[in-house]
Length: 182
Image 1 (cartoon, rainbow, N blue to C red):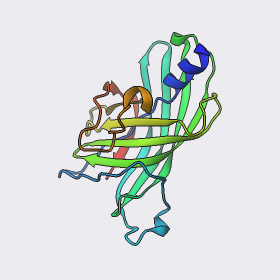
Image 2 (cartoon, rainbow, N blue to C red; image 1 turned 120 degrees about the horizontal axis):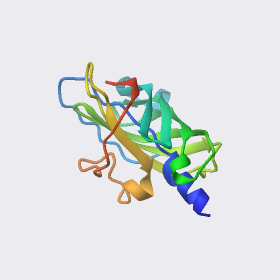
Image 3 (cartoon, rainbow, N blue to C red; image 1 turned 45 degrees about the vertical axis):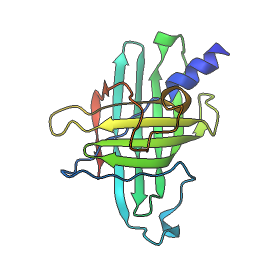
């Protein structure tokens, strides 16, 4: 049981890049089921996140992530994030694998992006339907992006990730890769 809890808490690690726009933008979205843009009367992409990167938090704890999240003028979101777990040996976990997540919300403020996610599949035993959160701040040219992610029940128990008062989360550097959010 400890193994599954540790895996669940640690293996949903991924990041999201932040907006490179030079103006403050704000797209609050509720945690609702994701919708395809074809169902929207205003389906033009208003904000998007794309990219991939690796985070080496400390020896025995590293993961990579890639994907895209988009939102339209109605606040609907769609996309997919894949987290690749490379090393959790610092926590006594020897498994590696992937966690696939779909966005439930996206909010972009300046150079920072926030997202709510739901697990859609996992090779690590993370239950489908588990909620996760992530945030990323774009460091700009020549500087690393920073961010953090994890299970929503640990980092966002009050479901505030896409509100005007998202939870404070640790800022871990992206050691390689690049993300773009517009």
